[in-house]
Image (cartoon, rainbow, N blue to C red; front, side, top):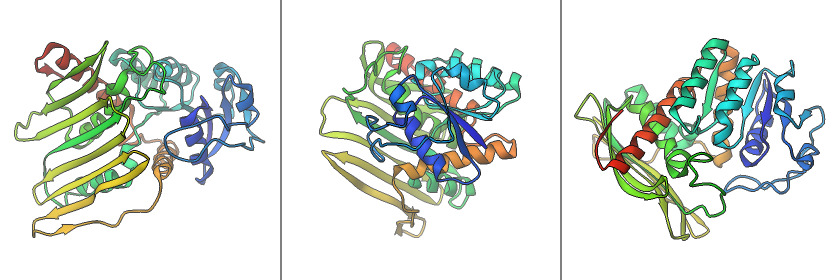
Length: 346
């Protein structure tokens, strides 16, 4: 499978490195306007995890300054889009119309209308559209997803999900709804997708929080489903102090077990506050053995799933564009609920 990456920033680099570790897939082309990055000098690329940018050997890889040039390359089967969110819809639709399968970073787009246009373009082109919701591939979330879908612990009863960061002052336009979309679309969309994956689509949301300009800064949401016995909630957003740059986790309730996990970065120290723990029906607290690896391992697993889907011709049950479209819709409905102070139908 031959891939062309459009956008060589931090996420483009993480995707590139992940492809190098997988069999049966090759980066055939890259596209970026930065001359030094086309030449393989990625030393200025920085992120909040993974290896630092470095000199890359790009021999044998086609290099383009314009996306249209890459889309016209007959050697490229799959286009991997790692552009800012405000450009996702336009580039995805172009790539699909050029006859390419598309793997686009999350969020799918910044509006539900753009998401619908992307889904329609994939259907018209007869190509796969997958969105980079990597969370289900992190070891704790992957273990929980597998345990839940296997039915080992009985039916789902509900859960609480958390994802909070310190104010990302280094990200330009973070709170711009037309560029990045703030913490709702850049941060919570991960949990919105995971909730949709586990429980199906809610029928309404009730959210309470505080705004920063046009986007929600911090909030709590109660999700309501057709099955009114499901108790599902999420907390997400931004705090204004820099001492705890990140935390996420979950407590998931099932008939025969409760699953709990929490991780945080406190100062410069990454801490597992609660290792993944299964509280079972016999009163035991069990910590499952998880596959070792750093955060980049989740991206390798995610891209392996993209490769599997393209080779089989069947869309991923985790990365399908339709699920990502629902996640974006849930984000906008929560914003509406915070603004109006009322429950909102989905």
